[in-house]
Amino acid sequence: MTTGHDRNAVFVGIDTSNYTTSICAIDGDERIVFEERRVLRVPDGDRGLMQSAALFQHVANLPAQLENLSEALAASRMGAIGVSAKPRPGPGSYMPVFLAGVLAARALASGAGCALIETNHQAGHIAAGVATSGMPLQDGETFLALHLSGGTTDVLSVVKQENDYRIETVATGLDLHVGQFVDRIGVALGLPFPCGKHLEALAGTWAQKPAPVIPSRVKDGAPSFAGPLTAALRLLAADEPPAAVAAGVLRSIAAAVEKMLRYAFDQTGAEKALLVGGVASNQLLRTRVENRFGAARGRSTGLYFCTPPYASDNALGVALIAREAVRRSPGD
Image (cartoon, rainbow, N blue to C red; front, side):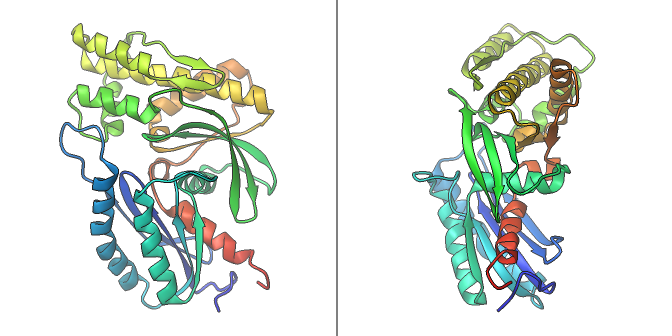
């Protein structure tokens, strides 16, 4: 039986989100010893994937990825297998894409004779953010997390408890998710999907010029991006330069995020906020949010950002949760 103190054991995380098939393995000292991510293919001009199409691609991706994992770690013992079994914590949270990861994780754990640790996609993002952002954290400490992605725009109150996280929603998006806003305007601009990094690069070419004002709307911490998308599309129809529109979109998102943070800090009394999710990897957005929020608070921002490679979908956080579960298991 592998224990949490066995430095020769490895801990595997599997995450099958709507756009990426991810596997990550860490050793007993939480160093990455294997990682592979495959971004799902979206046809040119489309703005996403149906669940059935995404699930099919995960099923197609996983056998080769698991073979690569087995080859890379042939001499290692499996300490535990972690998997994102659903999008968020709580009853009723469900997306078919996560079934592919669960089936793979169960088979892997059964074959290796090790523990299977189920968590959720959102907790995996938070765990990766905590690990890579440098945010100091004590057990039982409450902090805020903003999960900004194509499928989620949540302001969360989070407490680390044992190996996982207790997550409560403070506010959530009213219509479009922030990543949908980015992708829909990106597709309208002719950018490849997913559009985040391409929109950031385009906006960067307009960085020193005045950008058109695209309004931001946030009510009680909950953002609405449908109106800003309409405003951005109107600018495009009026022949506003594409780079100017891209810059305006990112400024609108930054203003919304700053309002979300201000509301959440005021409501909860928390002192720290962690930003995770694919949209949080945007460095132009990060700089603007830090500048706006720092000016608004007039002191240290208390903001922490997941490093860009682990802000987008990944399985590092899931592996870390599995490692922590074994470390804290009775008798360890």
